[in-house]
Image 1 (cartoon, rainbow, N blue to C red):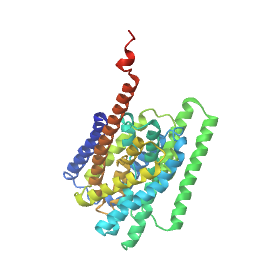
Image 2: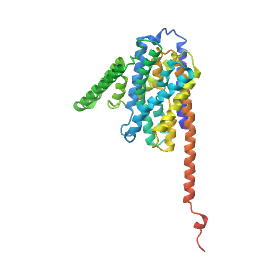
Image 3: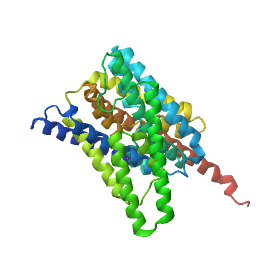
Image 4: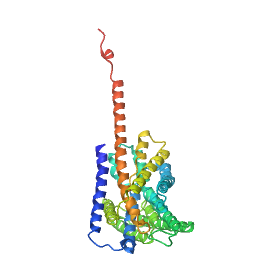
Length: 376
């Protein structure tokens, strides 16, 4: 239990420390109108691309076959329900249309955090695979919802035009963007097949890496994030630990930027947002994990963690919704604190139940004194 809580608490401490460094840096230099610059958009999108590709690259496709239905429901129906519940709570409490988009920005589960705690969790291997796949797949779905709900919210507020990656929120725009992402992934699959068929050895590896970098650059340029996430499912050159190092570097950069752009902390909206996100995860997990054991259902219900994707989505939303970072930043901290506390409590329950079962089994298997006594 302590090792699990310590792992998550250590990650939370890193987030706070790096964000503080970013805040101190911002107050020592003049940043100007950074969030509305083209360079800011491309840097934020690049960080998002790294996180999305890394999340799907790490999925073990064989492990999730048994629970493919649960994962599919979680990343479609589950993400939509979670985002809706959080948005309804935020609007009911504050009556501000711009708060609708915040529910989508924190509806996903951070795959890096889930991967970091996997070895120390008492979940079954099946539940671990489901949660990791859920955390990996819900990022691109949440990203798409964020873009189009942002456009819808801006239309309510009377804002027009684009702001960063926020697109025209019409059905035709959605269909067009979805087709472009699928086409991008289809082209990448053909290249992967051709490289595997006609090349081998170091040449094959070098070509795959070069093509991957070009695909990533094109995806960032055209904001084809869903397509890049799909590419991570099959376009997998051997990278050893390099992808993990790049992803962790992107995480640190995103947290630093979050602190650098933090205008102030809106603690009450952040608290409500965190409670809504954690509660929505618990409700959706209990609905979708009915075939799992009671222990696993508890871990899945307390599985909400926010990290790199929520941070980067906050960075992307900041130009259009200036209060986003000030609300999302404390919400991320509070969600992860709830995650630590609830999982530590559930870990203690599972451990105590396991000890009781062991003691009961030992009593049943130990012969009584009368049985052990030999007849005189």
